[in-house]
Length: 241
Image 1 (cartoon, rainbow, N blue to C red):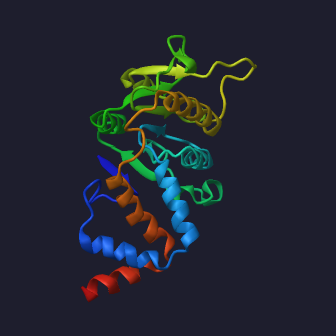
Image 2: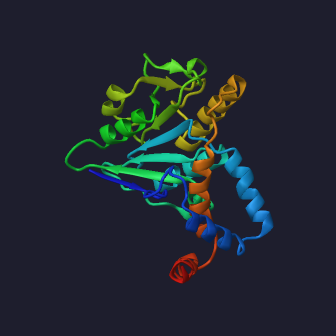
């Protein structure tokens, strides 16, 4: 099994030590006040209450468009199950969104990447719904937002796999009224996330947004992304300590 993530891993969700906080304060001196304020505003709206899973996406630009959608809706994590197809970010499509969203990849040539992904998310309290137009699928308006939810989107040719359908907690679809069966992945993700966010806002969920500890982890990642040659700054700073 191989699980890859672009999020901070060694100290995830742990309190930052004092030296790291001092380094972030040092790095902030190389970021404009406007950019710092914007990051704080974005972090205040970031959530892990909802997340997106992409299964074996065939066209990288479609997955990249979903990353951009996730960022727009304040979704911090996107999970990618790789079977035959390996996902590579298309920077033209993401327009920098991959810089701000945490991407978690699952690949298991000797087992099930679906199991690895689902087990990880269920440990975090997520219910998992696969998007599918099958007859036993509920309509989007029936999907409750009162529990942490992960939505699975399949590839462009076949949709979600039989394995995902069998192992998900349920199926959900967007009713269609035209000749075509479905929206493309990024449009579908946009509709689902908008609907879930709208429902969640009405419920006033107390733990909807990320915690202060999670914000510290994001600052650690984002500041390093923004400041040019941050790795050189980091080496000099910590060598001096």
